[in-house]
Image (tube, rainbow, N blue to C red; front, top):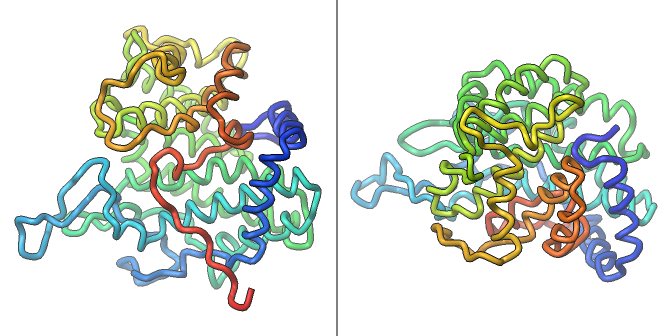
Length: 384
């Protein structure tokens, strides 16, 4: 079974790891550190959500701050692109660190053939999703709350983009004493309940109606989770219509993305949204419908958006729009790899190779690399 990463791309990744001793050392060092790490859980909270249930995921909207003009700071105000340090006291950084840890362990298990890494990945997965004492409840009702405004919002669903790349790696995790067929079935059950929440909750419907990268990544989550849970047939028509509408409303004929260009991190969000469209195209393209070159009502297309961005990825053109933080070019490697596969364009692979600092950046994605946020590393086990 494959999700985003095809069998051919997975095989190429393993071969490149075998041919790159420098990258092998980096991955081994990361994975070895993770072997002695404490398994993270949403129950390891400093602050409780309104339900007082530690199993309920809660995150703080990253770009919101106390209003300096108000004695109590309420309601908070937006400072787009500027992360409030209190963001790191909630569950979003923990979710990202957990997901990246599992992904790295699965990569090293496959590259080395050593079961110890696969077993640790299984332990982390069971702690986050399956252990009744530590599991996360399958919803994001309290994601990206804003003091004085809301206890959670639809756009907080974007926190779980990490699930997309986590599940893409999980399908490569071989069964072992810590990850059995029963455990996989349990994870599919958890994700089925999460998918139902995405499709039926008020927050899910709100996110599905967003007009920028939030709407795009909602579609990616639904597509990936539905594929993982064998529910693809129930969502494919809805997702195809949604994707075509988003291409029509988000991409101009010249390939520019106006919703993202107005952000204070415009390069970051243009890349992030295009990566989302690349994932959608991977899931939805089929004989007779290639979403890469499908043109919307105004003539825009994912292909046009790719061509619009390539001069910036090759550094032939300077980025002239607002970008508060330094550009992370390596985050474009995955979308270029997906584009190469979807379009059959061999010229894109050398650029993906050039931008990827490590081989895994062509098959996975780190929000930390994209945003420049410093997500915490997993804490070592007591006595380890």
